[in-house]
Image (tube, rainbow, N blue to C red; front, side, top):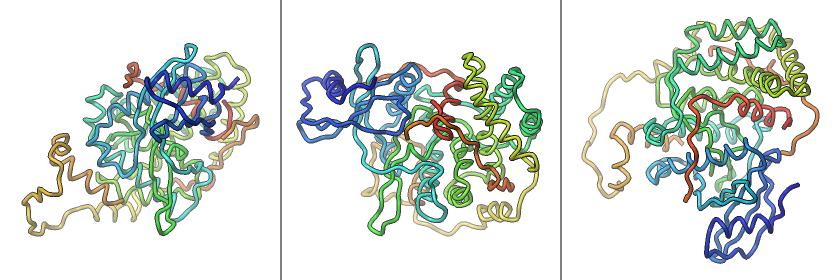
Length: 415
């Protein structure tokens, strides 16, 4: 049974001593009932959000959020083109952890509702590119997970082995995924700071004076780490209409070597979430989850039967032009003196010269669950070439069960 707003208000006063709550209301976050949430107005006029975990998985995510947000120093927050919540305090409500954060206004759009063209699609691409441009030292210094390209590949292979061991994985998918994992070109990429599998509904949007959507905030940070940037784009499998616009905008904002296999790996990560759902159901001994996963996998197998293998070692003309467009043909004379009135010395001390330059370039470039599940529509995916709080330590390897449940919440409403 969900906790009442008044009960959640008590968690606020517990987390923030000597604070008066003058108003409280239920907050619907579309998190499939994973949290009991409320928005509270304090005596000084501030608005805060309180979330209480309803199970162990949600509790782990709250701890991850707290730890990741603590890693976002004032300097890091200053270079992001959107806001991140401040962790104001933590409490325990009948043995369930509660987290109190600053309230960020805005609206959200689910992946399946992201339209094509400039607007939401390009705003999300810009925001992801900004996160991926953060210095990896932000993650390393905080002790958050760091994975190499080889480790990302190994994790995918281990997941496939576990899915095959259930003896419920369609052979066509086993062959498709084994081929992709064995394709060397697919795994030649530069790791970046990532969100561990971003979802559009985690981003808050607001319209500028011209009515154009812009990302104004990001709520979910629990997966912050270093890894494959393609994992933060796997949601494009659920947004075929916006796919090309997101990829084009993202590539234009990404200040690193062109990743010609980015879209292919994003597609692979998306498909493997179904395998993770199967493994979760099998390990938990939940027949209904296994049956659901098998149905989804069989539907996926049918939809990709006539598609070419993932990770073809080909480069399109557009990919080649993108590479050429990033090759320097000369350097104009510039004034290298520092304009000291436009820099904050304390903030500059947090980064190296190269990191500051990269970050500034990036910045200027700037639901309730249901019972039924439906297979993804992959046919439109062309596949071309493509605290006061502290949190417990996170495991170095991703939690397959957690990733699986997140996938199902996004795509099928299954909790």
